[in-house]
Amino acid sequence: MLTIAALAVLVGCWIYCILAIAAALRHARMPGYRECGTPAAISILKPLSGLDEGLEDNLRSFFEQDYPAFELLFAVRQEEDPAVSIVRHLMSEYASVPSKLLLTGEPPYPHAKVYSLQCMLDESRHGLIAMCDSDVRVEPDFCRSLAAEFCDQNLGLVTCPYRAVPGRAIWSRLEAVGMNTDFHAGLFTAVMMEGTKFAVGPTIVARKSVLLALGGLERVKDYLAEDYMLGRIAAELGFVVRISQYVVEHRIGSESMVKNFSHRLRWARSTRRSRPWGYVGQFFTHCLPIGVMAALVCHELWAALIVTVALRAASAWTVSTGILRARIPWLLLPLQDMLGFGFWIAGFFGNSIHWRGQRYILNRDGTVQLAN
Image 1: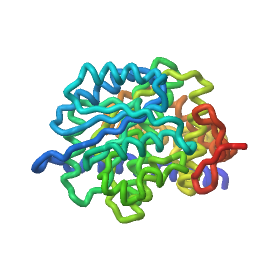
Image 2: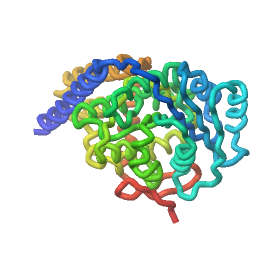
Image 3: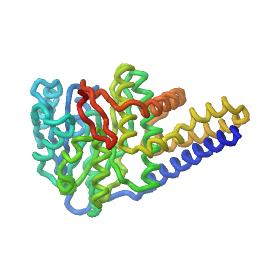
Image 4: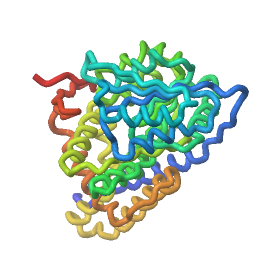
């Protein structure tokens, strides 16, 4: 009986891997977009706080857009922020690019990023709004490609998949493997199964009219996963939300083990609050750890483990290499799979997180509040 139950669980994992492969291929087969008429003007919003690894090159990639109509808006809290000198240098170097630096002061609510985005949205001049994190790097065709997608007049918001590029630290490399395989496999599978009813950072592009219809970006100020909720609310209001075909680079810094584990645990707990049943269903996405445990408990399933490894490898390659164009360090993949399974389990416990030097309580509806 135990062997039958373990095999049934493994079959569930195999089905998920097959679905992930099908979903990635489905995304790859989406038709391309061509420019239509006058290119839509784009306002790019960049919330900043401190010095990310490679920040200057990240920001430079946005100044070097091959596009006739765009502006760059940056926001920091105080003039003393170390990112200010880099922004001012680039604004001087690329004086022909319309750009502006905002000093927002301290936010009136815990979510400083949303406050910065709202301040920039209020100052923006164009009809398309691209919200990009400071650790994002793009190619010169970023604006042109996204504007072409919005030739579809029904489209309200798109979220860009991202290729995680690690820093030097082993923890950064492991996290990148997880993002490029597990996370995006789940992303494409969710879209195939239920449609796009959410958004993911670190890059979201939307019509300004849609953001205003939501009540502005402050509509999501109480949520830790503000990107997810932005797409979810837009979809609930009837706007078309889509996963873009454009892949950006998400540059992961070289954090220490403690900091890396802290933000990965924060991510797990936030996901559990945002999509509780979906989080439970992630059990079947951890096929390699489950396959190893099943084989250890039921020795008859060692042959089944070979099938599990093959499907896991095929899924990882299809998503990471086939869609994101990211190389897989195969020796790190099993270690990341085990580590990711551990974070998934840990995400079920506790409701507090540490974020930007503060401790917060995660409520059941995904909102956050400062801990007493």
